[in-house]
Structure formats: C-alpha cells, structure tokens
Image 1 (cartoon, rainbow, N blue to C red):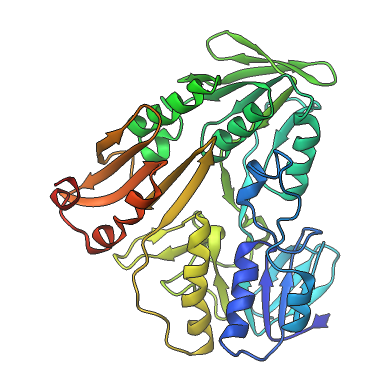
Image 2 (cartoon, rainbow, N blue to C red):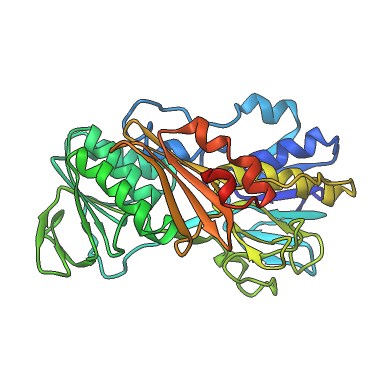
Length: 391
C-alpha cells in the first residue's frame, strides 16, 4: 500500500483544484494529493461545448503544473479510484494500488448518460471531458449535418457551436421546449426561438426511436417516424453523479454523496464537494447543485469545517450561465419549472424574466441582460416579495 496520509482528493476537475487551493490558502501544511482518472491537469469544463469545440481555445487548464509544484500538491493522473474502505481509511486505485488518507474529499463530478439502444457506430458522441471534446471537434469541422439529442444546456451549447461551424443542425428534445425541465416551458420557448432564428431545426415533444448506419451513423429516426440525415450525432441527455466506485463502501448515496451542510458524508473523515455532492440545505432538504460557481462557495465552507476553523456565514445565491450564439443566458436563484414566470422584457432575442413562488422572487433568468440579472441578487437572497422586482 502507498500510504500518504494527509488529505486525498478524488477527482480531477474544478472541485479538486479549488479545494486544493483553498486548503493551502487556509494554511493547511500537510500532504495534499489529487487522484484523477484523466491524463490532463484539472481543467475548466464550460468551454468544452463552446470555445474548444469551435477550435477557438486549446488550453483550458485551470492551474499550470508550477502551481501544484509550488504549493506541494501531488497530482496523480490516469489513476482513477476503484473502491473505498472507510474503516481502513484507504482507497483502491484502478491499477490495484492502495492509498491511505487522514481525510478524503470526493470530487468525482458527473458521468454523462448514454442511450443503450444506440448502435456502436462512428460519429456518435457524448461530451463531458476534454478528450471527447477534441474527438468531436475533429469530426465537426467537416460535418454537413448534425443531430443533437437532448436540449439541456450542453445540448443547446453544442447545437449553437456546430451551427457556427457551418453544419445543418437538428436539435431533438422529448420535452415541450429546450430547458423546459430546468427553466420551464415559457422560457424554453424563448430559447427555442433563439435557435430557430439561427437556422437550427428544433424538434420538441419527440424522442429518438432508432439510429441507423453501416459503419458510421447515417440516419436518426424520430418517434413520429420522421428521419434526419446525420454525419454526426451528439447525445446530451444529462449526467449522473460519479459514484459507481463508492458502491459497497457503506457511504450513504442518494442522487450523489449525501452530506450535511458542511460537506461531511455519512462516514467519518469523508467529505464531498461539487457536482457529485448532495448537501443539506439550511431549510432541511438535500440539494445537489451542478453549477460552476457553486464549487468555490462549497470549498470556502468545507475546508474550514475540515480544519476546525470557522466557516463563512454569508448566504450565497446560486448562479449559472450558458453562452449560446451571442446571447449569454444567466440564472440567479433557484427557479423551478412550476414557478409563475413574469417576462418583463423581450425584444425578440434578448429577454428578462422573474420567477415567483409563494409570493416571493425565487429567481431571475435573462438572455443578453447581464446587468439586470445581477442586480436581482440582493432581492433573491432576502426573499423579497415579487412586487419589489416587478414594480
């Protein structure tokens, strides 16, 4: 067994990098080891479906190798975790070696969902990591016809990028509108309008029945019987928490690693952060947030709690964004599809909408209106009456 002691972080993305950085900022001087199943240093994922896919950016590394050297942070690449033994305080890696820890932080993020019925044909892609983005980029440059299955944020961003590259794009979504399961049908229709204005064939309320081809994908058959010719198909139907390696560990798992409001799991000395972590909300329910900005907020809470320091008490308002064409879609708060939506501005492309729940403002979503979105932060944090923002 390779025994390091100290703090071991499993995962090689934003959550791992931010947590390691926060540990050193908090003057933790013990060993810090990042264990990643990827061959790249921790990198930024949001650009994968945008700038990386469009070949505008190649390097999305969050911190250079020198940062880890200067801060005495060990990074073990290409060595994903296989299992966890909380009693022995060890993790077993896929190469069979074992690694001991004093404190373990789980930051294994998400695994993209796939469609099992799809045949094994060239030209079918998912997009979650850098290698997948590069592989898709190599084919996207020469593709004339693309079908994107799933109109969530990743699907919409990929559709926009492929359209910008010149491909004919069809966006297929079983829900009534893009993003309907996240932002509701009303705002989803505004997003669909944006894509249609850019020439995307948006097909909502229908799923994929079959994918055909010989060696390479050629045709996508929809549930209504219509057929779409395709050189490439991108599956963007969502992701699930990366917890397969934790099965049998005894750790409580329920839509991610179940934690308290500081990131502690059900096992002593085991913590979780980022997309894989389901934290207890101050109101008592469990929440797993998949947004980029959430990671830094959690690191500022988890690390002090782990080190016996006082964590910050400030209430953070969830925030995320999505770049589609020239429009940045931003969301503050926790809007839900069942909320009452008040669209207060709409010029045919850009828009601003407030979400009302139980008479208070629950969130704001804007397309191309960054200043007006961010101004609502204080109202959302305070649970202000909806009249305060509609006035």
